[in-house]
Image (cartoon, rainbow over all chains, first blue to last red; front, side, top):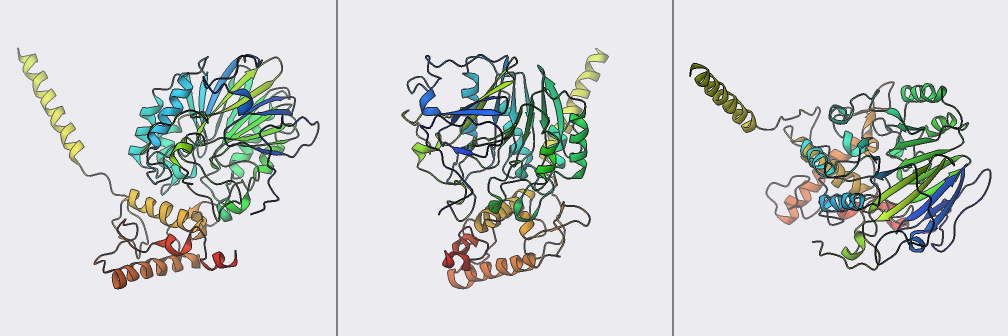
Length: 337
Length: 135
């Protein structure tokens, strides 16, 4: 099916380097490395960067060491047991192992929602137990729509909502960067689009009001804050309002989950990035009758799951975003089922 | 010695309470306005039907059948305001009827893995099976 809303990018293309308004999305199933500087994005296919023998970044590639780094993981769907991945706990643990094997310990982890599949207490317990083994300073969460089923997020808030506002939104500062966790899954719009709502939008406007325009901003939420594919509910109805409050900032990065695949878009000063799931892949936009768990051959599964690592360089206000699959293409796969 | 006896008694009492609490059945959440699905359905079974059978089977999200609360975008799960919810009830009854009549299942239940015919048998990820013919 042809999809005019979507630009495919050859993995060998060295990426995007344009000033001003830029509308481009990049798809790379096995991961994408990105560096952002002053609203300009340069992206590279992971195959160019990864050493297939070691699974790490090639030694001859010069990547500036960040003042700090953090990792994004998403869509763990603990409790899911369908053929698309009957062992979601195993793949989450593989993701955590990947984090624990990183050359430098990430300062913190952002989990961008769908921790659980059915919002059951035992599913949250299992996730919490698994996340305890991650070597990091702290873990920050935002809910996905699966975490707020049936009770509009009451249980999620009891577990993860300490010191948050409203349905669980909050912000914090780290080494000069301002991080904002938004909730766009409790209220919904026609077609499954996310909604932030007026109360949260007002809070956001006030939250960033006192910040200098040179402050790097990182926003994270479950459903994409850009219209990835509204026909499948892959977007947020009132995201334009939220993004209007961020236009004056020199560097804004928006990290989302929900769609279980890596996509990127740069629009002016804002770089959007969606992460892979640790549980199961979903089809590329418009390539299937509907969104949903996608069964792939067992040997391909872990190439379509992964984590996102971000290095922050204070002097340049640069974020280097790297998506790492759970395995490398040429790596022999373990028996999965 | 007296202190030791007291300590043992308190420990035993605490252990007994802990065992009793652990033995209690998990709390049952009461869902309003269930007409086809069992009124005492567990939160887990209800969520599984909504996600696996309806959301994935029809390629829709909750708001396809559930109406929003007045003056809010929050869903009112008990509301019957949307006609799609009524149709969903009819479809569940039809599905159970087909399984009973043609596949000899004595007590077919939506969400039961023994069902021969389910939502996705015809819907295949589409809200309306007719959409598939048009593609």
